[in-house]
Image 1 (cartoon, rainbow, N blue to C red):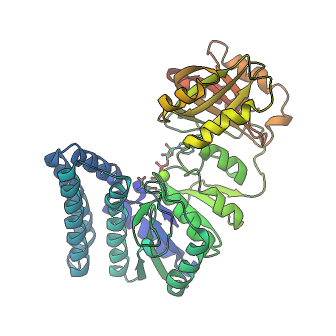
Image 2: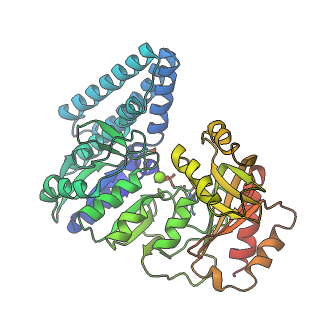
Length: 451
Ligand code: ADP
Ligand code: ASP
Ligand code: MG
């Protein structure tokens, strides 16, 4: 059971989560928590203030964080029956002191390495799980707290640690499995891990979903539940299309495409460990546990040809031309060698007779890239673009889909179009100011219009 930031945002939310966990006790749950609410953002903001040398702002951020956690703990424990347990109080005080030390160090050096960033960011999950596990115990649950750093082994890519599934399986078997059982619960942190040398890492923003899937796979869980603030995966981000509809059943492949193309409800890497272990993933609403939810499994259940839409921006489109080289063999190899060497990942590719268009992240090292590419080609750069993805298991078999898409977007300039090799994803590139309008039009034409 993984609960996201909004699910544990304050004392009232934590009580709700505790009641869901209590109901699940017969199934021997492992609970993976995110940091409370906007804590991780706050830690990032504090760290970058410190990096600028602005210690007062950094300490102010820390003060807000301390207040939020103290308030939640006080509300959970300070009632007629007692007060915050001493062990929890010490753990909190100790963590706050460590964050302050780290921030002071960063401010002194005015240097924030990814490694320091991870050390600071990891405290969000440490704090939320300490408070929650202590609360479960107070409520009479047999609850164990496990430090994810002892289990979630990653490589040393700070900021985006690459999990080592073999080690995680072994560590989970020795550290977590003995504590699991019907009537008991184990609480651990999402998002964070550690290298073999014990250095703290993180799995990247939104990584708690990934933690849950990795631990679920390592422990051969019967289900991975992602508890969040929506009734499952919807046909589009409800913040952009308020009329987005719930999707009861989704295939692993569809969910992976949606996550990769921007549906924030799932971290893009979440699906892979679950697929490999054939474990169903459900996405559920913490505040509406009896409501609708999505089940993601290997089979394709969605009766529609278009299942959902997602979008991601800003991205940059490069159009690479070489009248001399393109028709010759080896051009694409030479082109992609540059991207590979510079570690720039390419998302969409479309080729024409004398040019290749491709999309890269907006924060890719454009200058170096252009310098290298201009040695053998001319490059046109279009920045501030967005990818809009239409996902559906039966896209390829749906006659008339193209005309519906182009009809709905008649006055929107589509700059690039690409059908995913797996045939369940059709992606368009538009200017970023038109990203949301594109989604709304496509949702009306392809989903509300019932293709
Ligand atoms: P958590 O903190 O629980 O991990 P997130 O904020 O990361 O939650 O993800 C949930 C949010 O994802 C929702 O509030 C919603 O705005 C957004 N979202 C984007 N695309 C979708 C989609 N297709 N279906 C559901 N939610 C989506
Ligand atoms: N707390 C982390 C973040 O905000 C991880 C997560 O919530 O999934 O990115
Ligand atoms: Mg999330």
